[in-house]
Image 1 (tube, rainbow, N blue to C red):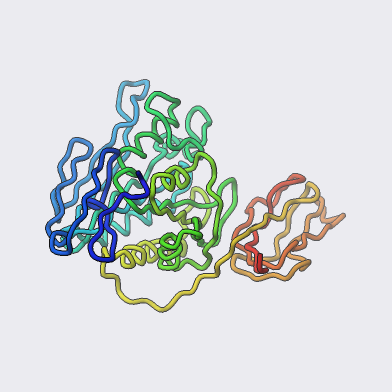
Image 2: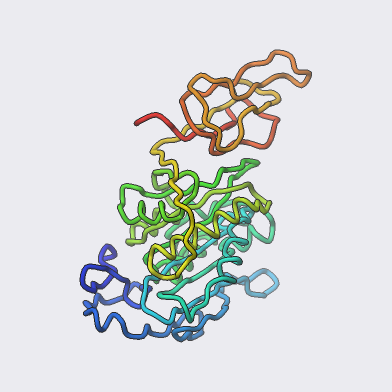
Length: 353
C-alpha cells in the first residue's frame, strides 16, 4: 500500500528510515522512538551510516566496449530522523541546469546537520548526456518510459533501475528540467496541486510560477505519484546552456523545500508568493516564416494583444501573433525560423478557470 508509506509520531507522518523499498513494513512509532538515530542505508554495494555521505555508481548497462555505464549517485544520510528526498536531473540528456543545481545544493548540505536522507542523481540519461541529446540511442524518451521493466528496452531498464533504487526509497522528489527543442522556460514548478502536500512544498519552492499540471503517461512524476511520492518538476532555462538565474532559483527552491520538510535549516528569505495557474496554452505559428518575438519571459499580456509577428525572409507579408488568452509568458522558442503549427510562445492562463 504505497499511499501508507509512513509512520506516525503524534500528528505528524514520517517515512520509515526516511526512505522505502517495495517490502517496507509499516511501523507505528511513538514520539520518543521517533527521536532515535536513523539506520544506515545500503545501496549500490555501499553502507552509508547516519551523519555520513558517499558517492557511488549505479550500473545501468555495458557499452559495446565492455565498460559499464553507470548513474553517478550521491547519498546523504542525515544524523536525525526525517523524510527521504531524491533530486534528479538530465532525464533528458541535453537539459543541464539541474546538474549544476544539484552540485551546488550538495556543496551546501552537511549530513551531520541533516534530518532524513537526500538521494541525488545529477545525470539519469547518461547516454543522452554523453551525446548531448534529449533521447537515448534508440530514440526513446526516457521520461515516457517509467516505471520501466528490468527486461524491457534500454529506456525501460534505466527507468526501472531509477524507480527501484531511488524513488522507492523516498517520499518526496524534485525533478529538474529545462525547455526543449530550442525553447526556454521561465523558472516554474509543476505538480499535482490538488494534493495538499504537493501544493505545500510547491509554494515552499518559491518559483515565480506554480502550475497545476496533468501527469503525463510514462513520466517519472506519474510513476512516482502512483507509489505515493510527492513530486515537483522544476522547469527553467533552455537545453545545453547554464542559466545562472534559473540555477540560483533552483538552489534556493530546493533548500526551501528541505526547510519546509524539517530537514534543513535554511536562512530566512523574503516571502515569495508564486503566481498559481491551472491551465496553460501554446501560441502556434499560423504560417511558416521568420518569427519576431515582442514579449519576454514573465510578461503579462492581454487577450488579443500582439506579442509577435511572422514574415517572409525579406520582412514582407507580416502576420501578427496575438495572445489567445490573458496570460503570463512562461516559455518561448529561441529559433526564429518556424513552420506552420510550430509552438511559439507559452502562456499561463491569468483568467479564472
